[in-house]
Image 1 (tube, rainbow over the protein chains, first blue to last red):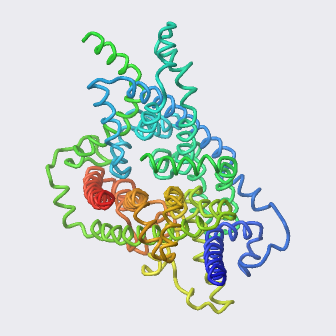
Image 2: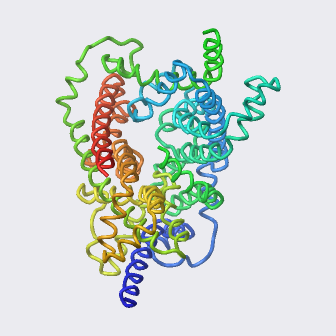
Image 3: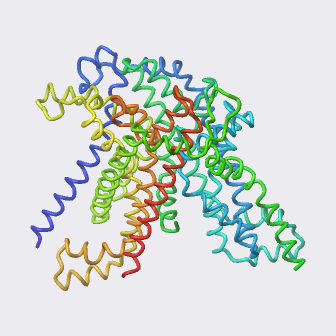
Length: 276
Length: 292
């Protein structure tokens, strides 16, 4: 029995460690080679860098306009997610608390489109952005993200509101609070747990989304991090040290984000999946 | 009666901001897409004409589109199987060990945090530089292939990178489901003489069916829309050998052709196919769930 236990231990740990090495392999290879000179990299991709030099990084920071791209992405994510949360909390709460035929219809209207793949709407959406004159505008793009994101967020808020008691809201109404006041003073603070989940998932979505900005943003002053990384790859396709340091720089913000919010991120996925 | 009207008015007020962005950027594009697919709208002319079903008739004989569709189906089938099997295996392995759980979970989920654009380019480095080095210097001849240039291997390369990026997410969902399986059921089965293999298939597997439904649904949906990985890794090439439908639509609309009407017709076809496939999947898996 003990022998069997040991055998299964060895098996499981071998499997897990092998999988972990495979998972980290491209990240570590990119990291290690990003410190080399191009000549070093071409002679041996598996060796340690001979000296620790940040030259590649300094070069790349400038080439990909890192500061600007980072700032663009951060603004885009912040605006998109703020709107998404505000709009869908307002709607999700009221939709849950109102029990009329209209509320049932609106909820269905919001939810039914969750199945439509993005590639099916991207061309008409492109036309809408042209017509509204928000092509190349990060602020405009954040409205687009809000529009694409509210379905899921309303669905989650609606489900969450169902589970919180109404007494507080009723008490507030008796005390003469208007609907809007009740929402901001009483309801919004109670929605905090689900707001955190929605916030984190959507920040990551907007931050990592590629196809939508690729279509809407063509002015390189408005480029997001991924767009400038992509352009850099196109321009310096044989200059691997520049590319690898750019990739590390582009991955850095999400890795830091992951280090800080890991628990909430993983909990959000598990919760979302169980409820969905 | 008056009360209901008042309630509805306040409801509409609260929904207005969400409704505006939702209608403008999701609902209207989705519905107008159906209309545009019946026109010859392109990026060059200001006006367009109604052409009926001409676009759809053209799609029927568009070999590029059907090749892309064939590729996408192959990709979806392999990807759904591979990523779910690996994710479930890893989830079971991790859940069976208490102490190292957090450590491995952190690592396995990490690729999911990084955009597939970045992941794709990192793997590009592995496929075009590192594997050759291993083949030449370590004698690992089986790695000595043109991973990006040869369609047979580039398909494999795409699957490797896509699975690398997706497995962590599926694994987290499976882990959550595994935690919901009561320990006493497994113990009871062990006492009755079930081995680990039987225990998994007879006790655990039926109890995590809902997670399987969710993961299949998610990986099917993501699979049919695959874009980032292929765009960065092969760009659809060599030739069009690894072109997915999403890439084909993108190319039709934004690269060279700018035939928006025709591309919209293609995306309508894609939507219908995705809808049918996921509907079948949900029906099959949820019936299995109910049988219990």
